[in-house]
Image 1 (cartoon, rainbow, N blue to C red):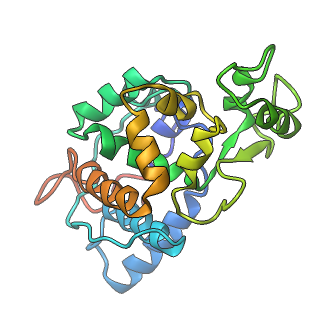
Image 2 (spheres, rainbow, N blue to C red):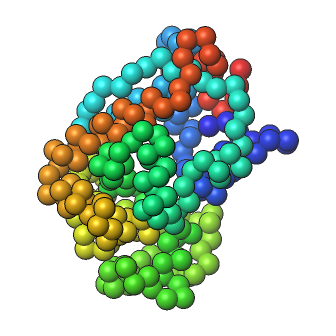
Amino acid sequence: MLESTADFRSEKESERNFGMRNFKYLNDIKDVLENECPGVVSCADLVVLSGRDGVAILGGPHFEVKTGRRDTRVRTTDKDADAYLLPHDAGVDAFLDTMAKLGINAPQAIALIGSHTVGRVHCVHLVSRLYPTVDPTLNASYAEYLKMRCPSPNPDPTALEYSRNDRGTPMIFDNNYYKNVIELKGLLRLDNALFLDPRTKPYVMRMAQDRDYFNEQFIAGMAILTEHNVLTGSEGEIRKNCQWVN
């Protein structure tokens, strides 16, 4: 969440984080927290709690998360993000390997990616599947719809050119993501690949049919993900402003 400076390019500048927006709301929440209980709630906890509550507000499961994280003083850069985060066109092997390194197993990983049931993807990350030829793993009629959303192979990265992850229930945290990819209507290359790969297809099929199973695996995966490599105790700090170290 740190901002760039004259001699430092933050993680926000990484192409892997393209499309991340509205950090201002985290600062709004942080301002209220600092006014009520200064120096108590970290930005790291704020992100986890906001994510948890966002899922519940959109109709997904409510679940408990641990608190007590501290904020790092280390200024990780765009290059760190490039090395650590998956690209938008990652395949199943890279996805499962990355999740396994975090201690997240296959069904948990596939449930976490199901959070793509809400949100949207910028055309910058879609056009490689549409131009010059359509990705053969993409539903043909859906490809035509995406071409209407992204009519140019060279979209303006600063423009609001995007497609929603789920056209049916775009603001409901449900299991429609899996129903869409079964019809080969996933936006990113990984989405349809999870259905086409025999290692992951059974989980996609089950989560499409059983929302409770999806929720169960999602909660399990979130418990691991949100507790990975955290700072606690006297480590790090509690930032006063999420954009800057104290």
